[in-house]
Image 1: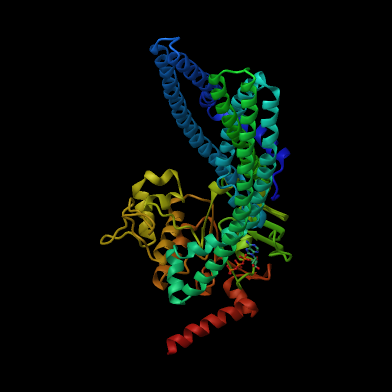
Image 2: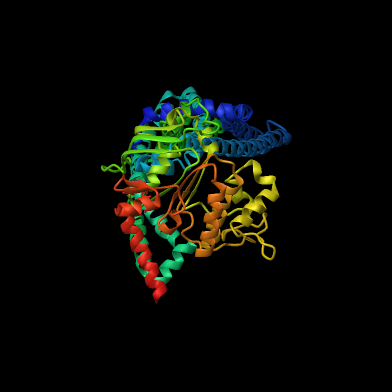
Length: 600
Ligand SMILES: Nc1ncnc2c1ncn2[C@@H]1O[C@H](COP(=O)(O)OP(=O)(O)OP(=O)(O)O)[C@@H](O)[C@H]1O
């Protein structure tokens, strides 16, 4: 993102935002504009009333008018002030309402867009940053509209003031306009500096906030205390904090001096204008009442013009932030969005992978290289291999989480690229080693497996029973809130959270099931029990298990060994042992470990 306010972009963003705001709440926008016009005219009426009060009082003192006339105009002034306050209140409430709606509406746009983006986009640093930067951009967009409104309101009032001054002397109006120019230029310059600093500081701010958050995260605190890293992280945060604060203070000092000079120039300008007024009055071309009213006009017009400059600057800054929202919304979407076909209802032929290669966006080397594999319908495949061999990447491609870059994947005869994304997700289910621990109820955590089955308590209880979380003596209630973030919630152990994730599979009728090391935190008996249940469940289904515990893989129909992104070996357990290759070596190493442990 550019670190300068680009006015062409700001205007472009305004064009895009205005129709959205209109769509959100036309009534609130109309009300807002009517109030804006009224508010823009009120200061002129105020000046008129001041002139009337002073003029009438003068004549009352001179005995030309009865006392009641002065009271009448004073009452007019009080009524106007009450009316102005009501307008301000109505506008504040209306503005708030528009603000809430806008924040909500823009957040909907961001969430919907996020759901349509391929996960691969988030692997790219740039798009991840972009998502981070969208936070608050909706509010900035709304702020832009409100600022624009304020600008128009100021322009209406200023025009009225300038016309009034012009009526008495065009020089008055021109002088006032000219003296605002330095303040305008200084403000634009300051705004550019401020915006540039915010953008260049953004990585620093994120780092400071990350380090600060470490001290607010339960798991991180555990490690920090245990490894006595507190002082180190605190110093790291402190350094980043002050680096950022020093830069801010430097800019604030500079701005403070410029503002001081501008303020004094402003006061001198008002004094200069008043001298012109005195000169005109001395020529007998205005009354005392007009003189008083015009001095108010001069100081109010100057203040409003200064305000206008600030609004213009803020408008530019908000526009640049709001532009991020549109950048994000324009991000290329997953190609899967255009796919039209359904996932084959009952797989008959199975899954065929041809020459599949995959490279992560931020890496040079491919994580999958020309993978070829046919998985028959109803086959249970175990995938094994070293860390980083490409197992998870492979199944993410199979599940359509990552788009196919090179090669093809067929479900029966249908190319994965032609299968509608929601149909693919409906027909498959996967449990990962790092499943999300939703800080919600047990029921909601299970819902992730099957939204429709959420009211079928028996089915949910049965699933909990299979994974050992519901027994006659000790049962997890479906409406128990889980986690540690909210009051009255119960946290689970790592293994119990894994069981929750596994239970999702047992409430879903998917034809293709994937387990990506989801049993690492289970005790051996539970793992054996759940593994047998998984085999039962997947009896006639196509399933893939990724596991580092080779003893669990023996029962699989076939084992695929991944090495450096390629299929190194595949066959049944006995075939691979007989082959005496990498699998046999790994199996031997694990068996020896168990034998040694049992000998001890
Ligand atoms: N998001 C990512 N961005 C860049 N590279 C990645 C990403 N995820 C994985 N990789 C790289 O791709 C390769 C394959 O990773 P993958 O996660 O598929 O391995 P794995 O076999 O599942 O490993 P493990 O057994 O440790 O889970 C590794 O070299 C890894 O560093």
